Length: 346
Image (cartoon, rainbow, N blue to C red; front, side, top):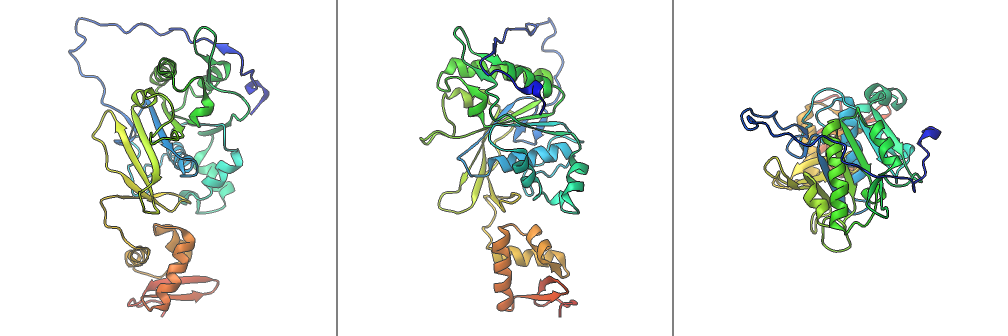
C-alpha cells in the first residue's frame, strides 16, 4: 500500500445527503423491477449489506476468504456442500482487514483446493489475478467516527469507497475497527448502515461485515439496529454439545430462511445440512473410497473427505488395521481402496 493511503484518522468528512431524492412517477407501480440478485444464492443479497458474526477463532475470516476467492476466480462452488454463488463470471473483491496481514490471508488461500494443482506462486495469481485486492488497514483508523455535531465518514472511508467503486464485493473485517462511534446508539448505528447501504446500491457492490457477538447471548454486539439494517445475517458457532461448527443464516429478507449447515475441515470449510444423518468419520472415508472406485492417494482421500486431515489419516490407519479398507504403499505414496475392491494395491 502506497503513502497515499496513510491518513489522519481524526480528519472527519461529514456525509451529506448528496444523492437525488427518489422520484415517484404516475406509472411508478406499472412495470416490474429487475429480479433480486444474489452474491450467495438465498443467503447474501447482492448490492446490499450482510453481516457474519461469531466469536473469535470460529473461522469467520477463513469463510470470508473462501467467498472472496470464489467471487474473484468466478468459481460458483465457494463452500463445498453449501449454497452456490448467485453470480457468474469473475468479479472484483476488496478485502479490508484491520486484524490479518497479507501473509496470513495468503496462508489461508494456500489451502484452497482450486489452487492445489501446482505451485501456489503460479496457481494463486492465475486464479485471482488483480481481482482480489487485500487492504491491510491496521493502524489507519476507522471508516466512520464520532464528530461533535454528527457522525461521519472519515477520510479513509472515502478513500476505501473510491478503491472499491468497481468492486462486486467489499469485506470489512472486523466491524469494530471500521466503526469507531457508539455501537449502542441506535441513531448513530442507523446513520452508518444507511450511508453505506446507499453507497453499496449506487456502486452495485455487496458489503459483508464481519462482527463479534456481545458477551451476552446476543448474536451481535451493540444496538439491535446492526441486525435490523442488515439484509442478511449469518452466525458461526459450535453446534450445542457437538464439536462441529454450525453456520446459520438467521436473517434473510428476500428469500425463505435456509436451513443451517454443519461445517467441517477448518483448513477449507465443507458444509453438510444439519438435517443430514450424522455420519462418522469412518463412514465418510468409506464413502469417499466407494465413490472413487479406484485406489486413491492420502492427499486425495483428505481432500475429498469431510473432516480434519490429521483425524482422517489416523482413522484410515485404524480402518486398514481392522481390514475394512486396503492401505498399501506405492513408491513414496500411500494408496487407499475398499477392502473388497480389486486393484493394483492388492
